[in-house]
Length: 189
Image (cartoon, rainbow, N blue to C red; front, top):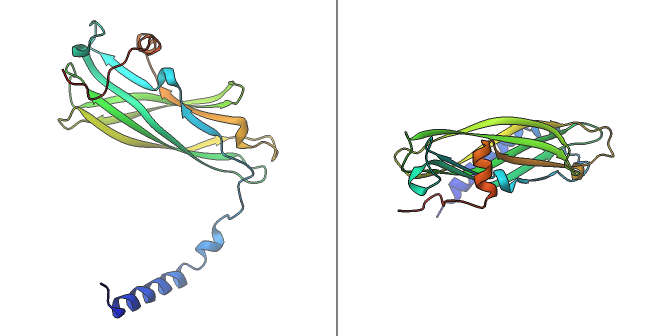
C-alpha cells in the first residue's frame, strides 16, 4: 500500500510535468476526422505463405517456411480537404519446417490501396524477417507508416477506399493456396 507521502510526490511530479508540457495539448489537432477510416483486411488467397524445398513435392516433410497474416489494424487521420494519412499494424505468425535451411527467413508482402470498386490505386512491397532462434514457430508485428491517400476534396471519405494486405507469392504458391491446401504452422509429424 502506498503512503500519503508517495501520493504527494506523485502529484507534485505530475503537476510539474503538466507545467513543463502545457503547450503540447494546444499543438495537437483535435479536429475530428472528416469521415470514417478505410476498411482494411488481408486477401484470402494471399494471406498464407508456404515455401517448399526446391524441386520437392507438396508434402509436409518438404516444407521450409510458412507464414500467415493473423490480423491487420488501420489508423487514419484526415481533416478538411487534406490527404488521408494511414498507418497499419500487421500481425504475422511464422513456421519453420523440417526442410528449412536456417533459423532466419524473409517474407515478402504488399499493401494495396483500392477504391471500393476494386480498382487498385497504389501498391507498395515490403519485407518482414524473422529469426526462429531454434524454435519452430514465431510471431511478429510489423508497422507500415506514411501511406497517403489523396482526396479530390473534403467530400471524399475513407469509406470510398480499402487497404488490402497479402504475401507476394510465386505462381506455384498462389495455386497451392487457391487449391485450398494448407499446413498448420505447428503441425507435428
